[in-house]
Image 1: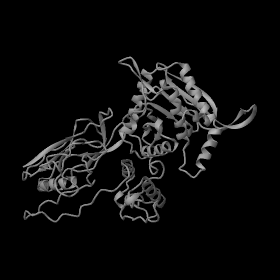
Image 2 (image 1 turned 120 degrees about the vertical axis):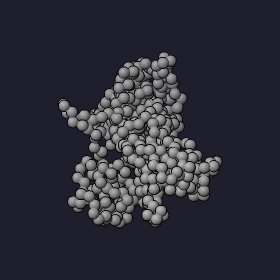
Image 3 (image 1 turned 180 degrees about the vertical axis):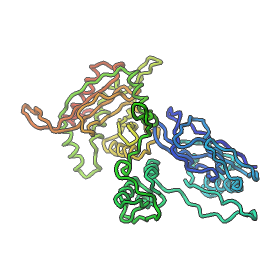
Image 4 (image 1 turned 45 degrees about the vertical axis):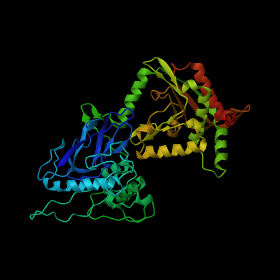
Amino acid sequence: MAQVLEFKLPDLGEGLTEAEIVRWLVEVGDVVAVDQPVVEVETAKAMVEVPCPYGGVVTARFGEAGSELPVGAPLLTVAVGEPEPDRPAAPGADGHRAQPARAQAVSAASAEAGSAASGGAGPSAGAEDPGTEGSGNVLVGYGTSGAPARRRRVRPGPPAGANGRARAADPVDGPVPVISPLVRRLARENGLDLRELTGSGPDGLILRADVEYALRAAAAQGRTATAPAGPRPGGEPAREAAGAAPAPQAGAAALGAAPLTAAPGADGVRTPLKGVRGAVADKLSRSRREIPDATCWVDADATELMRARAAMNAAGVPKVSLIALLARICTAALARFPELNSTVDTEAREIVRFERVHLGFAAQTERGLVVPVVRDAHARNAESLTAEFARLTEAARTGALTPAELTGGTFTLNNYGVFGVDGSTPILNHPEAAMLGVGRITPKPWVHEGELAVRQVVQLSLTFDHRVCDGGTAGGFLRYVADCVEQPAVLLRTV
């Protein structure tokens, strides 16, 4: 007898309590394997795919794209085990109902689930019935078993014919290998069929550059070719599909700017504060309410720092980024002024000082402002910091950051100079106690060794929680940072 199991939105961790459904990856009546992703959701931290711990036939889905669900709310139901003949499934919140004729696929789905969970070698270890025993370890954005199952979409066989026998099933197509859910969204919003693209990444992985190239080519040709002819970013030819939809408009949509969900109001356009934008708004509001912050700043001559970086990068070793050098300066300054690597426990009325530096850095993305965190930045050299900044920046750009990579920071480095501005008084990244801001480095007249000269000048600012320290400590920290920028050899005394 078939057993219908309910799969609920799992605990997302990191304080997240809800998620918005972006796109369903399965339909009612589809056969799913253990650990197969079934829905794409967006949290306040990242966009991820949720895997189902059960294998069987999807009998109901709860919620449509755009709806928000709290943790613990039902996502879908799955029928596992031997089916009851001709018993219709209960409809889900979106009104979908499984086909009775498809119920014959349930037992086959259970076998398929066990095979997928164990790498095709039969039922998963430790489960007498792989259809009823889920993998049990659901994490958003990750597989739920020890050995990740193949992430594929499996459809059941077609309905039975008049003679009671099922007709031959069509070949099963696997999922399209795409680097991130944001790439899927970009293609979907512009009417692009990813199945007709040839990815330029490893093993045919479709990158964002592939989708953007296809959209630009389609706009230039005046029609939608789901994969334009000609060379691709990876040097491979692309296929062209006939009967495609009209071409997407060039501009922001073609370049990947996701349109805002807005509704006209009496006095203008209203945009819901949800997802990443809503999380940022809540965090900034809380920071302003709870933290009595203050800002001090200083101009510094960064000429020698720029020369030191050029000399380091001329040695033929892996290149060192400017933000990595600034991060190295930050960790050295925090070793001298540890009061700023702390937070305030308002309930206990205590200052909590951290021994390790988890350095956050502000990154602007299409989804809004995010702050990835470099773990144990104090224990990394310039090369290691450069590599980690590059990895996290790329993950932020593609929407692949995990919740763990966006939380737990103890100090933030904000390089707003990339926007071409000199100074800023940022809001602290709650619950952290301090943030170093770096403006643009630009040639300016400067008195150097008693004479007027053109030097590379940068404005540095420190915003700090006045509860954890006074102006003397904050000023000492900022002055030490400025000294290291002006004379990088100062760092040698702290190594």
